[in-house]
Length: 180
Ligand code: IMP
Image 1: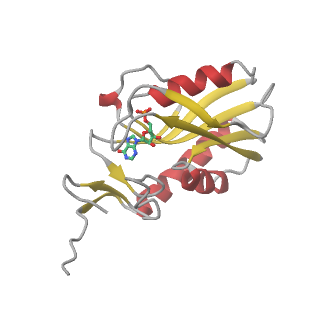
Image 2: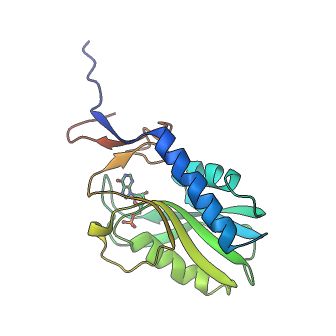
């Protein structure tokens, strides 16, 4: 039996990710002195970022999770989204930061921000580890961005391809033709 190695190319090594998250944590601390800040991670990819970002912050944080499904398979979003898991807590009157792994077309966050705005938080912003601005089809105002990246499909540090590769510490480009 022959084994084909998946073609992964490191785009952002783990040390750079962690250094940038420390900077983001310090910046968010300055903007929300003391807290509390509700960090809301979008399942599943943003869980790794949430865990590291919250520990890079000194202001008090509270965490919650929200699930969104986008219809569409493989590497693209179809444009239709729905809530699959709601928050456990009310965010009325709270300072809320939506924690996302990557902003691509903007469809997911554009939808989610409309949903969350209706719940009357005191403030509502987005922190995204990665941003692919060239792919945007819906407007999204991202307050904090870790890295802008080119239009390439990436995996690792929470990001998957067909549920694989989430546990890589580096962010890697999944080269065309690579299959888990
Ligand atoms: P958007 O709605 O197109 O902005 O897509 C956001 C979601 O698509 C992210 O939360 C990811 O789950 C997924 N996604 C977009 N680009 C990538 C990528 O390069 N690798 C893995 N997942 C991606």
